[in-house]
Amino acid sequence: MAEHRQLRFLAPPGATRILLVRHGESAAFVEGEPFALVDGHADPPLHEEGRAQAERVAARLREEPISAIYVTTLRRTAQTAAPLAALLGLEPKVEPELREVNLGEWENGGLRKHSREGHPLVLQVFAEQRWDVIPGAEPGDAFAARVRAGIERIAAAHPDETVVAVVHGGVIGSVLAQASGSDGLAFAAADNGSISEIVVTGGQWIVRRFNDTAHLD
Image (cartoon, rainbow, N blue to C red; front, top):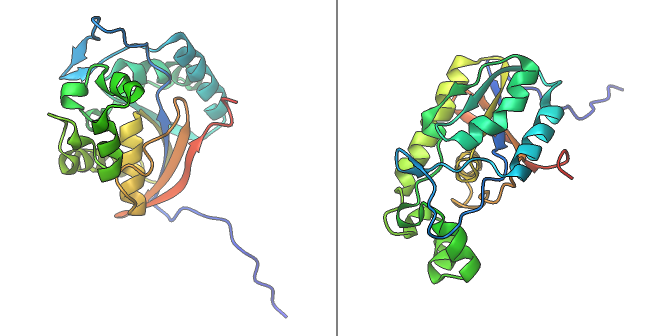
């Protein structure tokens, strides 16, 4: 009698495997000392711990068959990607559409400050599952659309390949929410230096993992 064992997942022909790495911990925000801005986005460097996380990410991924590394316009992603890029001899490419969601009036340290202080709008953000509760924040539909455009552009350039995209917590949340049809912020808590994974095939995005931190523990 024939046996039919369970099969392991195999990406369809032409699919792209994208490893989404959240950048390492960034520098602490000090009130009265705002970070420099890049196109309206706060641009802190990595904290010392963030640099250590970047080295651990590189050690974890060095044996993966990575064809390309993508970063955003913000330097914390480039600094996180640097150790892996050096190990693999790859020059990171910039995908500007995967920059972090703009938080309007809270862009430059406000979210950190108000989260610690228990600001009522923080509770509203998570109750309504959208960042644009914050005054002046990027509209949710526009953010989701540009993130989708960035992912689709990467996938189109790398059929049958594995790539790394070093991005931001809000971006990872948006990608996985769109892939799974979940609430907008259901995946908004990726840790610094964590690895999430999707497979893009045609118009379908398949979630393979979220917030893998085994290399950080």
